[in-house]
Image 1 (cartoon, helix red, strand yellow):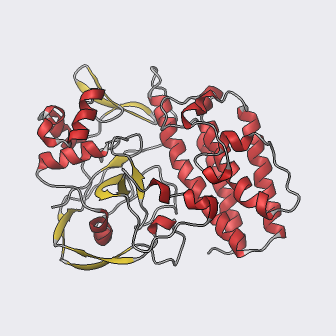
Image 2: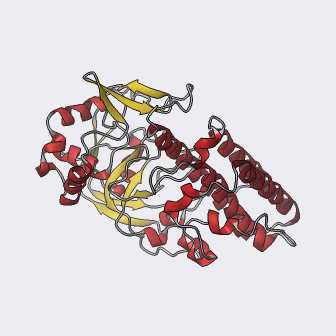
Image 3: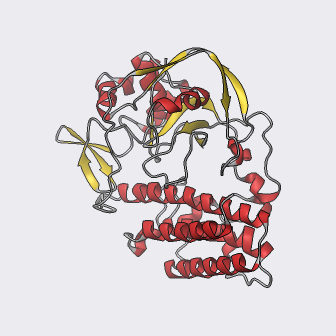
Length: 386
């Protein structure tokens, strides 16, 4: 647990960073929701604020006056315990409250948290504040990826900024890291912050394996495409092949072929594909098919964690072959926060590592991200194992 003063400073800097991410936006950008999985930026700003109001201010700050009674309905996400909420797919219908009112809400709650921290010293409060900070950091990553999807599906393909590099090359040579068979400890040791799905430190036995020290690049993925990867049904899971055919998928998300050359939409606008940068915006289905084509496989999350000291990571969320399941001894938090992770442990795949969009001091080697296999709007890539 961080010291109170440091924790408050982290809270304030985190709140400021969310607003910095949104600074390049036009008012119209704040409301758009192209698909259900992408939330409008205005909703993210309101939801992260509601979290602090609901879980910290209402129970801990005496005589706290709720900013707006309707905001719990529109800015709750999936907490059944807290009450009724707006349907996720309808978040783009929120022309009201206005962007300005949401920012006023943010300042109101942020100031109230500062008052709360001056008046109350409680261990449970500090734990909730730390969870709230990391919750907002999660939404900062979602803000960047949702903004990219919003602008990347605008027919004008406008740039979000001209000063951000989301595609950095890995300069080292590809090699295979050999890991001996044996028993390995998996999970968080609780000496610093983690989410509950990382808890339940336990031992697993792993067969001997090798794992690549480098992520798959755009050039490598182009070889798969040029060799008919998207038309070779034998490379795909049945569900993945159905997804390819139904949605007419023939390239990663944001890729466009123009006059025979491949481009991809980036936060800096449309750019030529950089062949040596790690591939991004792949579904699990595509990552699996590529590994099949290469004659290798994806690592399990346990293989990834046991080997993570031997290669750089953090530029792409990496698909693993592991289903998202609880660790031995896993226990959900009491109350509404028990809904944070546990109820999603079905039909999803684990990703490890973090990405270009993950905020500083937020990811760690035990972090377990999770998505449905068809989703690819996050910075998702892969490394191979054998």
